[in-house]
Image (spheres, rainbow, N blue to C red):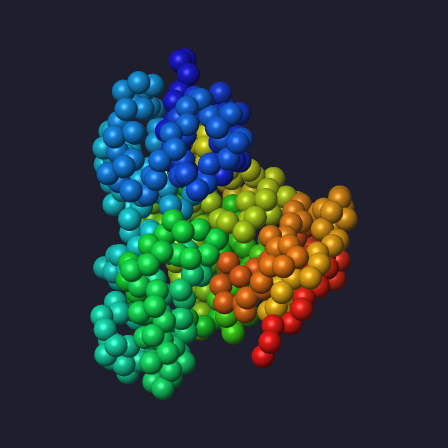
Length: 414
């Protein structure tokens, strides 16, 4: 069989690494802000363009197809999902509905409207259409309620409206962010409108799945470690500590959600709460989970979701037959500190050298500013570990992140 060629839209080094391990020729289309030395020396062809701009990426993609031939167009990263799906439809490499499905997975308003039309669980929701719409929604849904950008990620721009007296603050924040780009971590997302949703109570989980021609295999249910006072995720643990009946309710709801949304192939990461009304999907993504979740899943279940996402897309693997059983546990915990200025950082290399540590990293150095914790971009680093059970993994991870990694802070002025 001749060498297969994939047009890979965006992504990180490990995505490219998995495709090359398959012996696939990779034409990488990478954003100028995200290209790395590993990618330029590993990809067979590298096109450095803003792939989030359709008019820019289209002629480059068409030229790549003409010159190299393209058997699949794939993205395993959030900003590349829609352009990859649109190109696959255009090139006749899909069923013609991939872009439609990807758009409604990326656009939270389209997702909610589609779920309601399908008769699937969804909270009360409405678009923000001026200051008065906040008042009207508060009267309908009650307080608190959530205001979120329609199509950003990582908790950016999420706002919790606490009461009618709080709505002036909410509206000011909406006006501040709307129409701009995400300003931390990544600038590749445009804030193009806001959605209001009634608050969903209950513990939160994510479900990591692989879909094969419309059949969904739940690989893991991930327990989220959160704090209701902000929108930053504090950590993740697998397997989630859940009674079997609750796990079945969550996985059943996610399978119904993916089918209802039209997802047929590839990885997905679905955030869901086990509310007093039953399982309710918060949002979902037709891609791999971030925050080192794929490393946790591989440590606990032995499933490399990146490899499956790559190989299935180019027809070089068999479908996963059944959901895997956990052979251990794993946890990721994010490094947090009080606001101020970083004075010193130590202990990271010592933690990283432990045999039970999967990841140990920090993203700050002396002189950097530590902001108040608001969303995922405000976290300072991460520790991920493996252990025999989830309780042990969580306990170890929290100790290492809080005590063994040392970040001295000069407190911010009041």
